[in-house]
Length: 65
Image 1: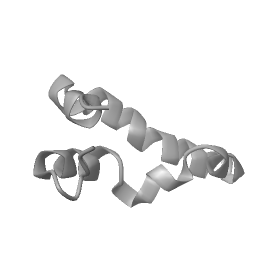
Image 2: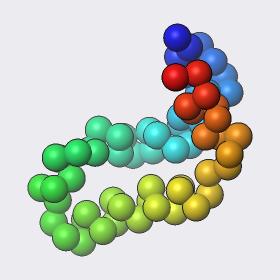
Image 3: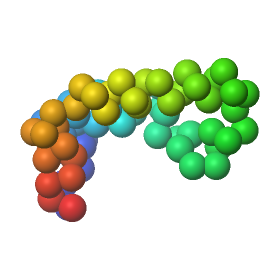
C-alpha cells in the first residue's frame, strides 16, 4: 500500500483535497456539534473542492485501493 508521505503525486493531491485545515478530522459526528454557520462554512470548502477535483486527481487518490 502506498502512502502519501512516500508518493509525491499522492502527497500533492492529499494536501490539496484531504488535509486543508485538518478538516478530515471533523468528518462524521464531530461536525454535528458545530454551530449552523460554522457547519455551513465547513461544508463549503469540500463542496468547492468537489467541483474542482479532476478525474486524474481522483484516480491518484483512489486508484490503488
